[in-house]
Length: 391
Image: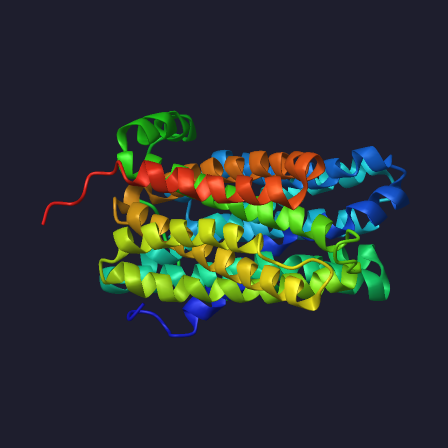
């Protein structure tokens, strides 16, 4: 980003991390929230589902507006929506109000998927992968730290404080971004209806987008399998960790996000193909290696943690490789393609989370590890059918 201050990329990375964390705060707090609001325990998962549903809707309905509306205005509007929804969630006394707020929290959080292509727009071509990698590094750190941060804050001052604190952070972020972000006005001049109608055509007519979205759907599915099932495994009699111990385990896994800036540099050097293959193979290897973890021991927990780091490294790397590949296809469609890319693999993650719960209940970690390894191997098999670029 030679034409812009050096601090702009770290600012975008920090903004993405803080905003995307809003989607994940409720995951470790679903039990206390449902108890406080009178939801039956069987319905506690709805709290997380509503946030995810809002995010999915935003990917398809809001993110494409990045090709139509001045990006700074759109980003600020969505961050302010998140701030309002967060404060209402923190004060909600009834379940229906909280669930409505959860939907809006997810919807507003798609600001991160406007920020990432925005960063790509501002970056010089020769540094685009590096810039996107750094911004995605901030986003992945936000994802990984959100759960342990929510658990720790809730243990100290209650679950409502998590949402109220984040609301204040969103208000501050909206002010900072409004003042410091350069304007970016898209060249697209059609209506919103025409913009949305073009989405199906873009997916059908862009093989790179289809492939990269499906590769990452499998990879993010593996990520979701691991982080859905490992808390169940670690709190089971096999390891006997407390929720605090699981939070510390998740902190270790967050180190895998360091692959994002490294991957961006590799993509800029033309290493996307070999890097993608290594990422898919590495994700499968992480699950297979996890089967070697000895039960009832600190060594077993350590092995699982290292597998989590390798998995997160691989999933983050493949994500950045995919974004670099689709962002070079054209600035005028970048926001829509990003929305389609993210929505596709987000569905893969949601489906895989449900499968992880079933596989762990039916076959324990043995079945779950095979499910987790199978998804990146499926992506690798599909990747092997991709035509090699001409020399």
